Image: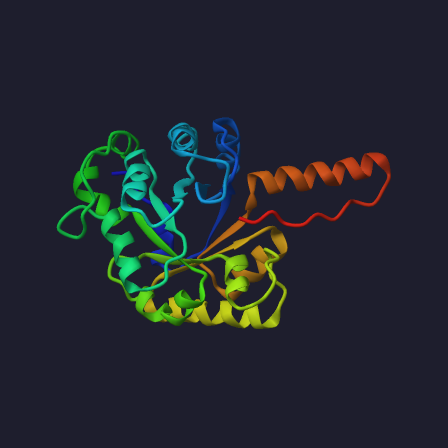
Length: 263
């Protein structure tokens, strides 16, 4: 079976950089994945993407060395199993609040006896190659998002869930759960303190720590802190920022500041 290189790096406490895919387009997915990112994540939760789009985008990503990951819309086993069968090598599960919910996600990612994933990797086996049936449990990444007040309170029990490979922090929802305004890349010192606390807990539990960013400043910041996987913006974000910058330069005016649209 094809190795999950991103997860192998995380297991050695190494660092990777990925990109978020919010646009329902196979061509843009192929373009972004060919740039050299370690992994790319198709966002079904907030991106303009449904399963039919995922079905087309995953083969496009396969034309690169990037590990394909999908953020599912919710912690629903059938959603998780469906994208894994389509060839995702990992899932990011939003709004995980406690151990029970983390276990639900893990079981959906693992074939028996470690879970209850139903067997039928219709495209996954084609992408992964020989050995998928017996090796998938060791190669598929199950990642829980901690971004709610309940999730913060239960962070240790979530992170100690057997079979969980990592935690991904959504900075904006984390901010909202702390009573702070959602700004995407959050500048508040109390937010940074919480991020550092969750990172330390990940290290203590021996699982990968990931976080979202909107651009290079916060990507560098979180890599310096020791995160294992950091998102360097999104397809739509990179497109918008570059177009706005060059349009302002062409007109000889100051670039208009824009609010983030979320992740």
